[in-house]
Length: 92
Image (cartoon, rainbow, N blue to C red; front, side, top):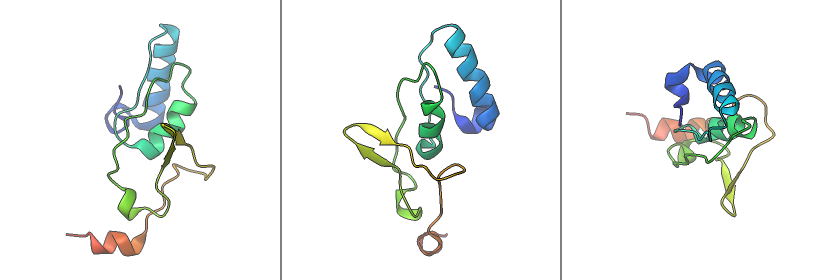
């Protein structure tokens, strides 16, 4: 269950996914569900998405979950677009 922020980002994830695939080890995400859903979609031994609604209130289009599955958006990049007005309301 690699943490994208601690494993070296997307490159670190890809390295871990290759190791997991070579050893047939299931791989799940930890935090960052918007990005994790995209990475798991490209991970041969994907297991489950660690989904926490931390940023749903401050992004333009939160990750959609239907029937227990994350719907990976077709937007480019990491899929996250901030709602600037919502972010401004939650700034400390």
